[in-house]
Image (cartoon, rainbow, N blue to C red):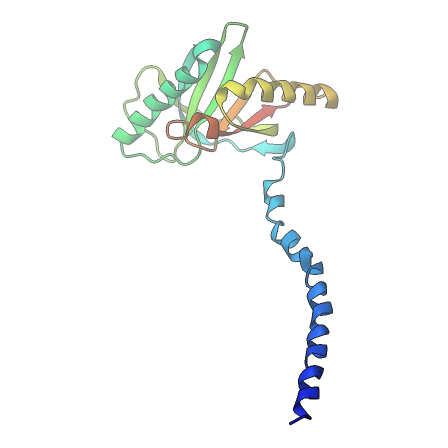
Length: 196
């Protein structure tokens, strides 16, 4: 009976050897770091990525807006286009876009565009079918409310200055989130700056 008890006392000693193994297991603090690897998915969006815009068939409406009510005016234009497409059972074939055709201190003129595969019929006078802008452009990404677009455009202007790039007088915003259904602070907008 005395013999098992030394064996029993010997077994705690092997138990002590797992404890170095246990202390080795804190060193797998690497896996939690590895668990944090999804973070790179959150990398900053490309800023000033060179891209080439392909022309798409779009139904468009021209408009003018004051800066004070800019977003509401753009939303109204998208609503009008969507209402026309819905009535005719036409599904958009891409994201809604705004093409700024001219800007000044008080406001801007724009084209609201929605890509389509088929031509809508009986367009109202202010609407037409056309092609979206094409050619070389720089792509910037804006996340957040439309009111904060100023900061994005300021950063874009600085980027163009730094790189000594000349932009055309057009800016294109592609709404990756539906501006009619997305909370304003959750908007994701690609801004394309066509280059001269």
